[in-house]
Length: 296
Length: 300
Image (cartoon, rainbow over all chains, first blue to last red; front, top):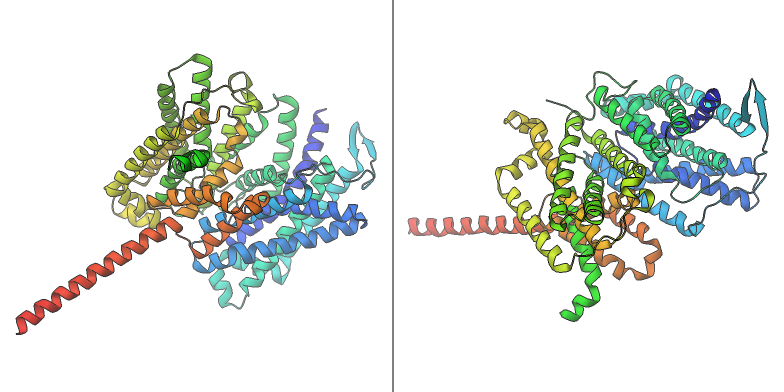
């Protein structure tokens, strides 16, 4: 039973990882919190749903939804972040304007879905279960684990081994120096936003499939979870986000199973506080940097 | 006037409560703390009053004061772990604080009624009392702005290291900002629960946080006029934009983006700054004129 819970937790945690990676990537590059990330996630699930019921093959619907959420994320950058970044000291203004984008997306989704809970039509994804050493795992769970593993590997390869990845890391370290060396920071921003949006969109589809229920506010709890993940893992750290997501997923399914229900959120957010107190930069964050600015 | 009052009384009351929450949010931002904890403070105040009044028959005024004190102490306790954090981390930590408050309210069902909340709270608030309390809070805010405390808060917001080099104890004044934010938030949370008859944890969730933040962003983060303008816009807007009622959150979102991009100081602050500039310009012109007159006298 315990190992079954851990397995379920790992599956949920891997989707958290997909979602949080984009969030932490944007923070790593821009030092800005993107509050519209949860709405982008929701948009991914919604777009895939409406594509599926209008007759598109499911895989195509997922692909389309990832491209669309990538574009949405780019729009977030252009509308909410770009002009603020030019003015400098954008931390707080960007938080506000991304909340603005979040409100717009959520409001549109509410009208489109008429505040209903949406479910993918039965048979969108084959329902199959396998039993392995006493563990029950569904085909969907297997596919989710595999997809996330492949995407995370691709992302790390991309960031570490390609020219673009080096540019991203250069801009993250020092935008001005990178620009002096001929890196086009604007294009780096657009690409990171596209990747972040597409990953969030896919996470939305996977969560929509996993729990087979989608509604316009579904992004909010995931965004709050993403905060926990990025703080525990270290804001801006990719490996930190992955490890922290899996940890959070397992912890969540264990607390739900073994502790009084309703305490899960309190425990998770209390954990965030503990980490902020002991290691403000997270488990994988830069130990030399001071959390969020200089301290005299 | 009386006619107008009766027609718009709920909007006026809503406006007054928003102004109160706005000041709670503003005092933190003014001191350079990225706190979005007002929702949590309001929840603490609201539940303290609701539980004390409905379950133990505590005097209403005393329970409002107690709610305010508890929320203020909550602010103090919150400020301790946050002393090491800045910027985005502060925002995340205060967001986590709000989530912890809400989930504890949901969990402690015997005490708080869980998701159903507390009902049957006597509705004793009216526009008059709200107006008086808002006036008192404004007076307190005004006096803070006039004294050294306001200048210390402004210095902390603008450049923390300079403030520190001038001998300002950063931790102490951030804690003070949190206490003030908590007390004001708790006070108006308590007033709200005496106004709405029934409260539940989700009244104080993400939407509440966004609304309070909107009031301060629209109005302004430093002047007394800020939250008033912000709350007024938030109260009047739904009336003006009736055809867009279904898309109200989207309208709010568009306004947030436009204001933070093109009027980053907020409407209220911009108005105050404009008058200040004009006064300074007038004073400078006066000085120039006086000098000219003096020169004319001496040369002749």
